Length: 574
Image 1 (tube, rainbow, N blue to C red):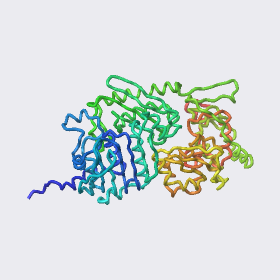
Image 2: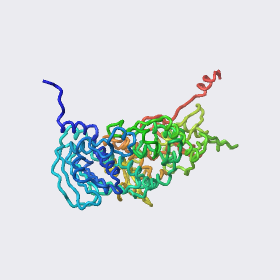
Image 3: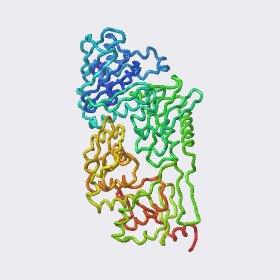
Image 4: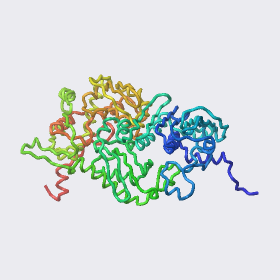
């Protein structure tokens, strides 16, 4: 008796579902792509419990008749291709004909569809791969698919799902790509019955970006346009000053298919590299258009990765195109030195895109330091000479040369001040003019998860619709830090959604950790140009802290180079 046999169709469908349906977001991806291929002008997506309980996608596309509806839930049934050569010419997002079969094999799926111009539609129920009876129903033109109880018959897959907020964030991030890539389509996302956002559907990519990422990003967009032989590059980037600690502000499209391609992504990031600090990533939304036969969309089970002919050529053109846009926006050399006859006016500044340089607020610190007196004579005699790369202060003193990390040093100053002030720094201080901040997908998920901790920290933040927050009060210790609009809330949410920050778990939200986090967000950042007066003030404050050697997170605040060491390195004997 043969030991090899043909798998039961239900078993085969569940195995196929493991490749296509990884989590709720991948289910949404397949359904939305079907709607786009159907010529829909309006697409509504609703999820419940992060997609575990419900994923519903409704569109006004051309719809399916009864026969097509039955065929749509069978494996390898598709209207997109007929012969092998069609793969080299297809511009549709789907083509394999296995998505609905895979989804319905691991869920309770209900489908309604009506062809345009027909008097009625059809309803079909598929539960765990078992197809029910087809029934005619009155309904609007288009298709509606409700996927309920995802992975109800695959317990291991169900248990592997992340938290409700994490799955919601993944769905939001996915739909950001399609809302921007298909700006002419009006898309709506609902969490249960709450509308998180609705795109204008006016065909303007910049309007979709502004809606999803906020006016601060939308107002700073730089267009990317270039045309080469059989290659068109279009889209938008943001100036280097607008950057993130994650890649959530990036979308890459090949022939309007959202893809993940590290070679093309790296080409864009390399163009930004001279302008960005380490582990910071640019915003960009880039569209690459080539001949259909140059793209192989069948290289990944979820069609998220594609193979490209002339991939290195395209990456090189993309790099040079973005590089030119950045050069026009910020024509500068890496570092300039300004020298005047008065030594006290000697300083260096990095030539960055124009920004407002405001005097730092030192008043509370200065009064406190006068009361406590100088604790470290070594640092009290330091004289700033220059700011290097807009990150470090070069200072000299009786014991040698010092290189001071401006962010780490200022962070240490704030941390000790907050510790002395105690719980008062976490008291909510109402803002004279509240401001709004639009969360990105991962940020919104983390806000839902940690909003109670923001209240404990001294924030007063209200949800005002969609993914927009109204910041009405901030911790007292952060009121006069000069932080840019939305910066405090954004950087905290960003660090939580990134997962790399030590404060991303409640166990770390102790009182000391709150002070450290508040100090980190209040302190001046790298790439912030400082005046000579600000550098002198920071150096003086370092002489008054209890431990000036490191920031609250353990990084050193300064490096010390003695005259003897410099002489030795130059081969001098004194």
